Length: 83
Image (cartoon, rainbow, N blue to C red):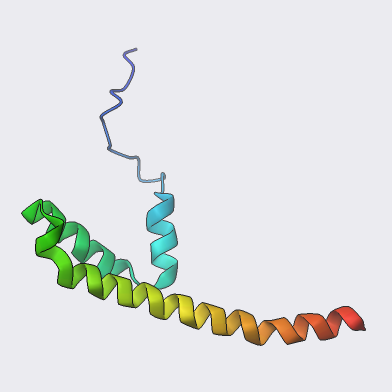
């Protein structure tokens, strides 16, 4: 049986890309795909700056919300540890 080519990027349906999974959890997957589509079409990241900025804003909003969520949980964790 021949070895698969190292350049063959095709995946089985049961193989998930860890980056795709991570981005999906942020709620920013749609804007991430828009960046990828723009890059595929234009082959020049400078043309895609509006998509990149939208993705950056989405990720920053996610990080801010996640930080706030963790900060709310922090006092509860400290209280339960002292019981």
